[in-house]
Image (cartoon, rainbow, N blue to C red; front, side):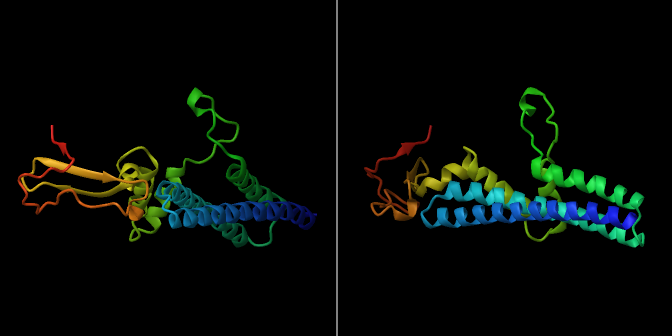
Length: 206
């Protein structure tokens, strides 16, 4: 009887794990392809947003699979599974799969806890960074976030060039929708400019 129960439970878990794995793969494929396509046409902010989501998904997948493998190893070490050991193994795994597939943080802004709350993405990112201390995971993630947000990273995407007058009284920032394709670019002045009667269009420091 235990064998039949185990087969039924494991078959269901196997199918759900397969679906969870496939959705992660399909999501990663979409994000990677979109990021690559965006970079080819200098859509840097779009590429950063896709890359950030790709990193978050990889971090989540890594953390959840590590936990699942540890739970599976623990079950195998118990020997021949019984209906009791199978139930103890299946219950948390089923919850983990459900949270990974259907968990959300919607409605948190109105202080309503969702029925199935997803894990905070920073928990996953921090775990991945701790596992790979030499790969600058946190720094890369922070730069991607800064590029996506209306802040330094996102705004400097449109900077074609910048410089300062030798007198250190003037700054110029030249912006373009696609800085690399800005054929009309010509520095109005450079840091080594010695023209005191410079007539460049510039902004004076306040």
